[in-house]
Image 1 (cartoon, rainbow, N blue to C red):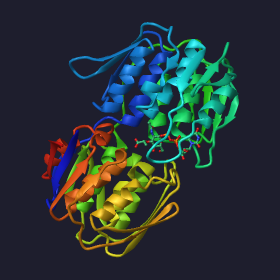
Image 2 (cartoon, helix red, strand yellow):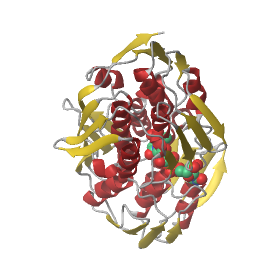
Image 3 (tube, rainbow, N blue to C red):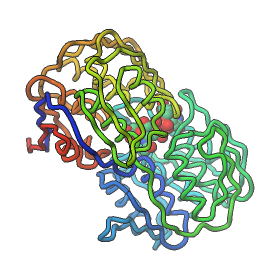
Image 4 (cartoon, rainbow, N blue to C red):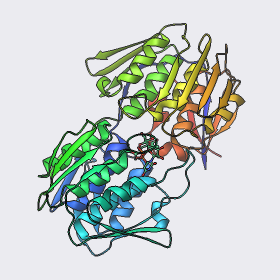
Length: 421
Ligand code: EPZ
């Protein structure tokens, strides 16, 4: 196993290239199950989760390989298998995105229930309800969801859940509806840029989807979809993480390829904190004032403040000049980073889905434990500003969603190394 060793105190300065979006690439790769012929995807990040999905797709008869330029080529070679087994799905929840495509194209989908998650309760009832509304029969078999259908038929579907829209449930229903007979309306659909990117890929394959990016998506089913070439959007969560690294270290960064229009709620909060964020020629420019103002943040589905930047924002507000508050409205239990930040000298008090943050003058380096992808990013950010050395253990969490983060940070002046335990 490996850990990151970080010596804090360096000001970050320079340019960081933003990678392709993990949460856009994964559902688009799963959508290749629906199409005839070859799909070529550009800007697919080199991440553990992407490699994990390549393995699952391989089991499902989809050849998914990169060429020497790094482009991902996907082609269905065998449509026999319709079972996404526990052994694979339990490693990566986003595997659930094969459910809609398998059902629509192969008329059967047996997908293991993903099981427990560090960030909290994550049921898939909305996925099942949406696919049942398109005509699927549902059965629960030994921990698996089994869906079967003769022919999917378009329907009006309300997909709102207790915490608002669901990103991957919207993706699953939209993918299935693309090959269903007739017209589908998805009400309370997720509006995330990753959902828009998936819809744009499907439309380039011949689908008829409109309203993507709004809470009401309309799909006119078609007979077949044909492979195409597509460039995955940049990763807004990676860009947001680096924006916060500049704010924390009083830095000056340009995030090459980052899209400011995908991060408006984040930019709004950072400007309230006193950070300067602007559109730049090649992406986003971020520089930080000396004093950080305290603010209140509430996470919400897009276009609200993303839950995937909640932990990183908490690390920032630990150093604000006053008391801040963060309320987590998407995954109310997503706070495993709180205890670890307090080990570094933060003053955080949790009460239900809210954390009170009393700003401190400094954090101190300590050995800390990563628990999930975004919590581990927050611990790295805290290590960049902490006095002394921080060791972030279980970095396999971070390799799931950040491409070569230590190389990118070291490239702009951070003192960070990957070490074997
Ligand atoms: C996606 O997960 C992202 N993952 C998550 O990013 C992200 O945190 C999340 O959306 C919210 O933005 C991918 O895109 C691969 P949801 P998803 O369904 O689709 C409840 C990261 O760090 N819900 O939008 O699984 C659910 O419990 C990951 O990259 C139901 O109740 O999230 C949650 O409270 C972590 N029933 C809320 O909805 C359902 O059937 C939103 O979850 C589905 C969801």
